[in-house]
Image (cartoon, rainbow over all chains, first blue to last red; front, side):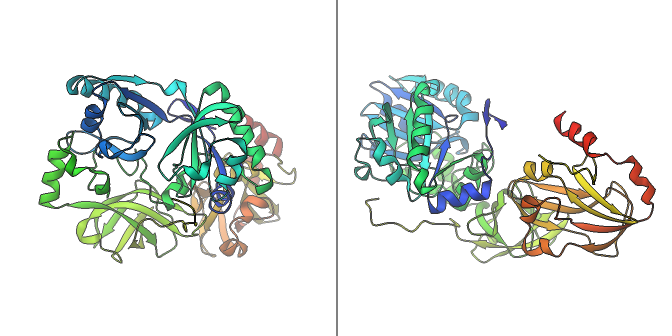
Length: 352
Length: 125
């Protein structure tokens, strides 16, 4: 167990490799109750969310979710989040545990300016249990009356799981198909146990923070505090697709637009080690003897069995196939820029 | 966790199997458990002289990197060839999977190493 944003979290249950492979080939169950939930509701909720979110919340139907940046006026990240549209004028923002208090303060302040909406930190009202992997649906379906095949990717629905009132969201942080289940904290253990019981014959196992990190990295999902923070812009982070340019003004828009017109100086790339060595966060990227960037995430991935990572590099070095060196404890070690994500699941025949 | 009585230990969570002036060196069950899945081990070249306390290799797991320290002074005479293709042996058989063999310059220095009871006490503190 490790302390994590005020929570005691298991890094691993049976081993990161074992857990990682379970999610890629069968399914794994994660307790991600540490995630924060901030709700914005009231007549002016849409305008408020449009102001604080990088993405276009007006494009969301009720029952749909989207990934977005919660940006500073500089276009950098206060946090990243999922925006759920619960009702026409009711949104839930799912944010990082370590940032919840900061996000709540920031959002409250902005919404005061934007208008007529209440902002509530409802994190303590929700535990969050995720089941991720190709077998996720067959494991969850027997526990609920909700027809899971009706929930499309990045949509959510309400119902019961193992007798608990829940919100079931077809989202995740692993690069696999799966569900995240918002459940009252006093019923979380019941849902957790029921999922493991239902998944027993498929060898579904509990997974910790370690596998969550290696899985999300293979899928190139950004991690706040590593790949994005208050010093990196949405464009530099390769998250231009989360920017709703056409929706009108929002916090950070002006700077991002200027950056877009001027062109980027640096950008986040994926790389694969060509020589033996694992690049860890904080290691320096070297080109022609000069330090030119920093590794933000890196590991040896259990599924692809390669040493991979992400780093900020000057755009001149960002082209696919570019050779870079990573300083691994004093030794320049060759790596190559490769496309993101490192891993993309093979889509099944279902509705996605 | 087990800490065999026929081995010596260090506070850096390494074990030493002494046979005359030869020492086999590996990491303990406690160490492998803390590190998690080992994905590769980088070891010194045979012939290298090492001094007690000096870093002489690295052990990379999925989640972290840690150093291998020379517990005693001497000359590296062999590295375990199994580790190149099967680093996970460090996890599955920590006491069979020695990493380096060192010819000790002063075998008597072993007197300052920990025995299994002392080491176990250290892992519990």
